[in-house]
Amino acid sequence: MARIGFLGPFGTFTEEALLTQPDYAAAELVPLTTIPDVLAATAAGEVDLGFVPIENSIEGTVNVTLDTLTFETHLLVQREVVINVQLDLLARPGTALADVHTVLSIPVATAQVRGFLARELPGVRTEAANSTAEAAELVSKGHEPGWAAVGTALAAELYGLDILAEDIEDHPDNQTRFLAVSRSGVPDPTGHDKTTIVCFQAVDRPGSLLAILQEFAARAINLVKQESTPTEKGLGDYCFIIDLEGHVADEVVGDCLREVKAKVADVRFLGSYPAAGQEGESRRREADAAWRSADAWLAKVREGRPR
Image (cartoon, helix red, strand yellow):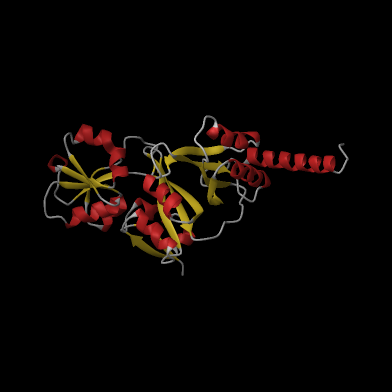
């Protein structure tokens, strides 16, 4: 049976997302304390897969996940999972909303309920936990009254807490994206895939990012996401993380990545994997067909048969 490490303890949104995948739900689930712990255990072979959050629709990228994948491990993405996120305020039985003076949760979750806290609990103190479920567990074991956690309904059930307020996130369409990663292997193309790369510049000069992006535009490859992050080498030294539609096995994508690799100092390949969400590969397939046609034409030209 496969072993899957995830951000624990039991009752996190990460576990909820993992359980939406029947094959993952049937595996041996191993809760770990922090995101770096999950990725390190995966890299060391202590678990077969690691499952971690990478992006929230309100707060953006989970930087610790991105940085660890980019600079500290050599793991490949196997799958992405997106779920809707409902945040609740949890407390020990007998606690009223007016009693709460301290709210505990993972910072990315606390940030998603700023408006609720300012409106309903002005002046409340917030403290950080490693996960929403750890926050719920700590509140359940605490002896001091007035503590609450931002977490899941599942965590409330697991740790014997009451739900003081439901759906407290500031934006209704709150979603989080998760990645499953392993030490090796690229999943076969599905027809609806995503590829993630990291591009490192040789020299920081005007137009360096444009030179990269032009390769994708010329092939009608849609970029789902592009952001920069420090390389950890010094101020002003950045690399570019790019999510694009398509699979490295697609001829047009492979051709594009080859050209990008030739233009920059280095490219880190983080994986080609099944994409979550609605299918949107029609433009990529059209571009792939056009590339094949153009490649066949070029072969004829080289053979002296331009027609």
